[in-house]
Image 1 (cartoon, rainbow, N blue to C red):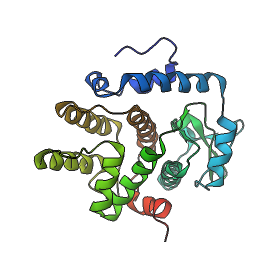
Image 2 (cartoon, rainbow, N blue to C red; image 1 turned 45 degrees about the vertical axis):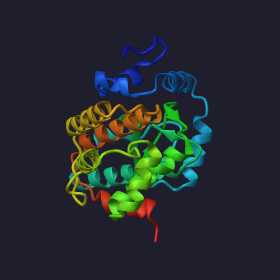
Image 3 (cartoon, rainbow, N blue to C red; image 1 turned 90 degrees about the horizontal axis):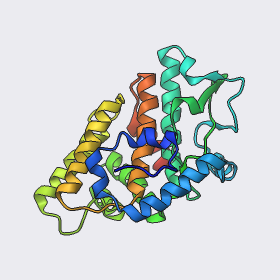
Image 4 (cartoon, one colour; image 1 turned 60 degrees about the vertical axis):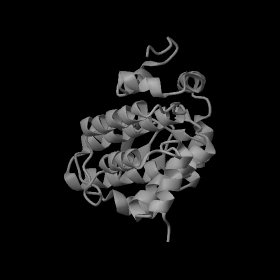
Length: 254
């Protein structure tokens, strides 16, 4: 699919990770509308301050700032222990945003982060989107169900997001669950992130959706973009993370 001319380069860079055939599984009309909205927010900065305040109120594990001027860039951070701590904090931010009904900042690339002493600082840009409540809550429940081992919750969440359809044959259902387990990673307590591995699992998911005649809402594309930026930054850090423990800390409070 050729993106409209109004789409900024930052979004085009993320779109290149979506397999060309994958666009055929997406509802075009809602996607076009959301592309216009997000492109305008990126150019104008509309809503960034308000959403930044809403996210800060959730205590996402990082400091929120308008700019990173004078701070140490994340790319300049040395030492595996510090890089691991930064990656853990980034994962807390990633999970915390699923709780924010006001919207979700999509761009978690390393240039949006810096260090202020020991604190990780996030300066979000205008690449943000407000997902449908059912989809956003479904995504949070997918993580809750997967990392807690609650198969019933996971199935309900997959239905809510449209990734699982009622009446899907058992063999196809088993295939989908296998693809998702592969995507989430086998070693959940020491997971390393590689964008090539993510892209491969993303391609396989789209192959599955196309093979079974899915038509997905545009929210699915934005989640893909969000995950891409997460993987890019965690791959740069090069550390293993206890994703299960961080997910439970943020999404499954005791």
